[in-house]
Image (cartoon, rainbow over all chains, first blue to last red; front, side, top):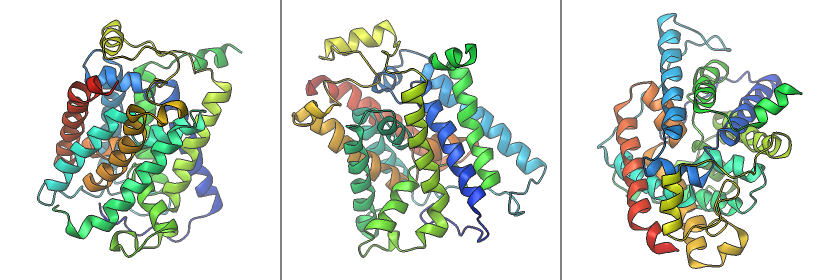
Length: 151
Length: 188
């Protein structure tokens, strides 16, 4: 997904409150399950514990069942639009593989993907704001270079 | 206060994983968009410093407003967990990992992140700079190049049986293992 699709216009403050609340629940879960921990990420990349695989694996299973049910029952969203999950674009396979590899390098160095970066800064590890700002610079650099990169 | 005591303990994977998984249908229902965190980086760039890039030229409030509020929530969730729900205690990683990390020079196992690499005092050292600044840069660049991070590809993408997401996740792991085995041992 290079450009997010257009949002429905009738977004009210209560909707924003729900987006924020979901973020709060997600943030607390990231901290309390320790997936924000550099040590846990090392344990994962060294295949020395089930914890991270359990978290990601059960998240995928629950999400997959949810999506299947939503499709099966032709669920509609809060704005009464049919729920459809946009497919990810493979293009020539270069962006997902090379981009994925680069992301993996960063994930092992910082021990945090974007969600945990926000949660760690909130939980008092103020130094992670450096990693978060660097991630912003990384995203900005990608945006500037995008036309010249193979995808 | 039994409840508070209970949720102040580290949460097992079978509690945390399903909660994270439920973010996918919850966001599809309230936003109509798939779960993803790293697009917030794109929206923030579009809002603050789009430059001349086509990639940042869109109505970020309309398309990314929900996402920015969602990541603001993640930040607040971090504050709540940090202040009221315990934490900060050392993470009960496996003995094997502890041994391996000790062997490459990590000695401080207190808290969620190693002070030798990820702290204000480490920022001035080469290993700290590499982990925080270079690592952060690669996370942001790689996630946007790949079109998603752990949430967008590994969770919502895999849950929707997307082949590009599987390729990306394999990339995440190959990249992470290369750094784990061939870079980190020489950093400290």
